[in-house]
Image (cartoon, rainbow, N blue to C red):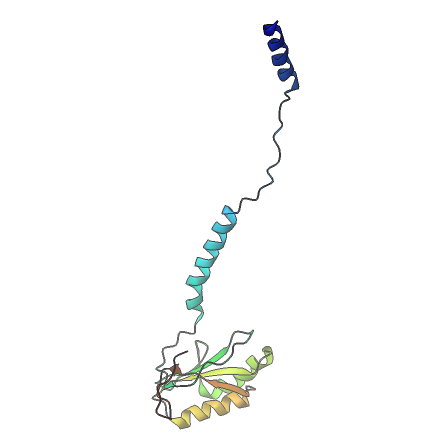
Length: 160
């Protein structure tokens, strides 16, 4: 009798079991997302230094801090040691500088421009370029220097 009862229990278990259907996976696999984000991070880390204007100029050193950033890509005018004027990286003749700047100013929303001048350039030449920038429609002129220069009060400057 014990064997018969055991047989009926086995039959009950077999009848009660149903085949399970594959359920949709309810977990999010974040591994591909992390992989894509790491690749993008590496791409931006490599590309960011390449976006800096690359005209070689020996900038004077000052104790001044950096200017706040803007949404637009900053317009940079460079005066090289040879006296050459460049807008971004494009050489421009001095007699065409004001006309070019007026054309650029008409397309931009910001009147901010950065002037990079070699430290060996005479003050008069720098002032002539600043006058051309003002005549071209750029009233907000920032002079670009390297940090780490001497402070006028004799204290050591703070690099930022």
